[in-house]
Length: 623
Image (cartoon, rainbow, N blue to C red; front, side):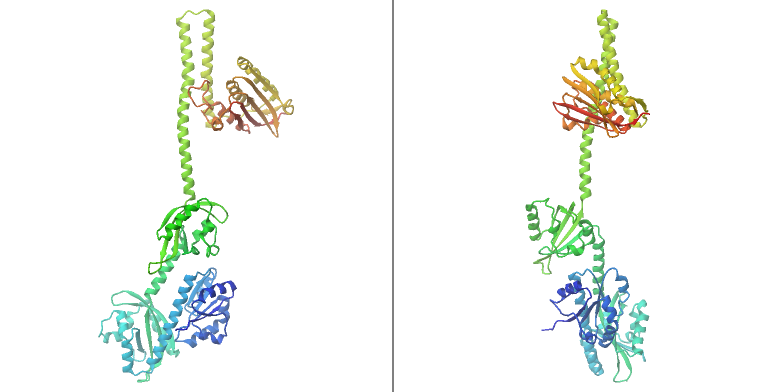
C-alpha cells in the first residue's frame, strides 16, 4: 500500500493550524514542526506569511536541493495581505490559500500540488534512467512512453522531440527534418524569448533541473498551456552539455481552475443568496449576499444548520413537506419567512436543489438559491391597501356627489317652490311670512354649503392666512352659547359653556375668527346629532395651549368611522337617506383651522352614549 504523502503544516494561528490539521490528517501524514534541514523530505509545505519570512532561505535552499523534483509551497494568507503575497507567486510560493479556509477547496489544491510533486518525482526518476541509457535504448524508451520528451543541444541547435510531443503539437508522424529546426516556432511569440532565455540561463549556470510554464500554438492554430520539467546533462556520446525535458499539457487543468475562479467570483458578487449544505444540512458555504441579508458572517454560518434562520412563522408540517420533497430527490421551490441574526423577520423566495454523487445514486449536498423579497411583499401589501383606499375613495366620491347634489337641489327646490306659491297663490299674511322664512332658511343653507366649499378650496390652495387679535376666551364662549341657545331650546337640549379658572380671566392673542368658526362647526354638529340630553362647551389651559371641548349625549360615531369623519366630504352616516343636512366639510375645515393655529383636533365617541371633540390652539398672552 502506498504510504500517505507527508505535509508540513506551519501556522502561527493555533485555530487555523487545528482546522487545517483536522481537514488533512484523514488523508495525509501531517507534521506541525521540523528542522529546516528536513524540509526536503516533505511532499508539501503549508505555512503563513510570518513563518515564510523566517524560513524563506531554508525553503529556497530545500527547493534547490530537490531540483529537479518539485517541492511545492503553499502560503495561507488573509484577504488584506493577498496583494503582497501574490508578488511571491512563481518565485518561492507555488500556491495561495485565502482564509477563511473551506475544506473542499483546501483538499483540491493540496491534491493537485502533491500530484504535481509525484509527477515531478516520476519525471526525475525517468530522466535519471534516460541519462544513463545509450541512444538506441533512449529512443526505444521515449517511443514507448506517453510523456512528451524533448532534447536540445545549444551548441549545435539540434532539437530532438518524441513522437508524443509531435502528437501534442499536431505534427504528422515521420516528419522529422522540419521539426528539428522549427520546434520553437510552435511556442507562443510572447513566451518564446522567456522560454529560450530561461533554458540558456539555467544551462549556463549549470543548474541541473528547472521548471517552465509556457504556451504552445498547435499546428491547427489552437493555443495550449504546457508545464515542462527540464534538466541539463552531458551527452555520453558527444560530451556536449544538453538540455532535455518532459512536457505535460495543463490546458484543461488551467481552464478548470479559471472556470472555478469565475464561477466563484460570480457567486460571491451575486445579489442572490447562495447556500450549500451537506446531505445532513450542515452549511459548508454561503456567499456574501447571504451574509448581507441574514447578518450571519460566512464563519458564523459554516458548520451550522439553516434552522438558525427559522422564524416560527411556518408550521412543522410545512418543513416536513419541504424536506420530504428534497430527500425524494426533487427540487423544492417556495417562499419562506426567516429571521435574521438581529431578530428581524424577512421574506425570501427559495429554490433548493439536491446534488448527487458521480454515480447519481446518493444525495451528497443541497444548493439553495434565495432572493430577499421583503420589499416586494411590502409593495404588494401597499398596492392592496391603495386599491382598497381607491375603492373606498370611489365610494366616497359617489356619496359626496350625491350629498352635494342633495344639499344644493333640496334648498333650491324649496326656494323655487315657495317663491312660486307666493307669486301664484294669495296666501294670508301668516302663510306668506312662513313661505318667506322657508325661502330664507333654504337660501342660508345653500349659502353655507357654498361658503364651506369655497373655504375648503382656499385651504387646499394654501391661500388662507392667520390674523391674530386680542380677546377673552370666556367672553367668546358666552357669545357662542347665546348663538346656539334658540337652536338647543327647540330640541329641549341643555346647553352650557364655561371656562376653567385657569382660563377664566386671561386676555390672549390668536385668530378669533377661525377659532370661533371651528367651534361653531363643532357646536352645530353636537346640537344637530343630539336628540335629547345636553351639549357642553368648556375651555381650560393645557400647558402653553388652550383646549376647547365640545361634548354631547347624541348618537355617537361608530369606531370604524371616527377617523373618516375628518376627511373632506365624509360624514359618519354615508347614506344619502340620512336625516341631517350638511356636505361633510365642517370637521375638515375645523381641523385645518386648528392646525393653522398650532393645535390639533380629535374626538372620542361611543355609539349610543355621545361624542367629545377636542380642539387645541397655541396662544400668546396679550399685553
